[in-house]
Each structure stands twice: as structure tokens, then as C-alpha cells.
Image (cartoon, rainbow, N blue to C red):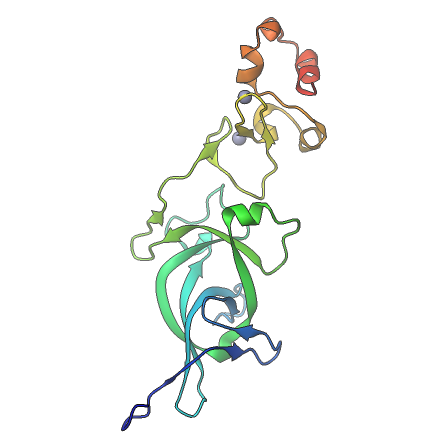
Length: 209
Ligand SMILES: [Zn+2]
Ligand SMILES: [Zn+2]
């Protein structure tokens, strides 16, 4: 080990006192914000160290930003549990860790049966100095050409496989949940048998196959 100046020790893990959860590098944690009226900060732990006697434990973290903390602010397609992995590194006292959380991939998040309090998702990396996102483009859906917000109910067209917001295709959310088959306005119009159909009632029947 180092001689002379006491070196800091690298730790494999840190146990959060009040909940006995074990935090290791690579884990995501909730950290107490300086302003208690704000939601917890979310960070990914990169490294844990202590002084030479195992005290003064610090975590080296990479912050996740919430959409409202980004330069562009929250947009309509941002999910309520969306986070951006930033390039903002920091060192914090391990005492500020409130608990652990899981930051899922976008796909993983959309496949969760139930979203718990500690479930988040991340599909963008965020440059905190210039506000740029990586990737800087994302697939868009529906007539309104918006990226997918996993909080929103969408219906898939069996013709073109595009996804649509019920409200964008004049459907109520209840109707959207009930239907088994859906064809969007374009695909319904492409079907020669349906070209003459403009009556809403018939159109609805067709959607239900
Ligand atoms: Zn839409
Ligand atoms: Zn379609």
C-alpha cells in the first residue's frame, strides 16, 4: 500500500444503513437532494472509496437528469419515469444515499408488468454543457409524428404496424383498449373493398375485424 500520505481505499460495496441495501459500482441510487422539496437525485455509482481507516465513505457518481432539469426542459414525449444519463460526474458522501433504484433500458421498461416506485428508464445520454442528446434522433409514430411516450396508450395498425394515439384517430382510450384489430386511416383506405366507406359506423366495424 501507499506510504507517506494516507491513500484512500477503494471499496467493493457500501451498505446503506437505514435499509441495509448493498450498493456496488454500476448500481443506481437515489440521493437526498439539498432542497428537500425536490425529488431525490438519481445517480449511477462509478466508484466507492473511504479514508485509510474505512471512514468517510464517498461515492463517485454519474448523475441522471430528469427532463425538467435539461436545457430543453420536459417535452410531451418524455415519460414520467424518464431519465437522461449525463456526462456530469460528482463525488458525494455515501450518507446522502437514500436507497437503490433500477434504471431500465427503454425496451425493458415497456415490458415491465408493473412499474414500481424505484423503476426508471433511460433512452438518451445527455451532454450537460450544451444540452445535446445521444442519440439525437428517435423514431416517431402516429399522425402527430411524436416519439413514443411509454406512459401513453397506443394502438398498433395491423396494416402498416405504425402505432397511434387513440385521440389522434378519433377513438376514446376505452375503445382502444377494447378493440382486437385496428387499421389506420391510410391502411383502411388502401383496401379496395373499403374505398367507398366513409361512414363512421362501418369504419368502426371494420376496425374490429
Ligand atoms: Zn398521435
Ligand atoms: Zn396502417
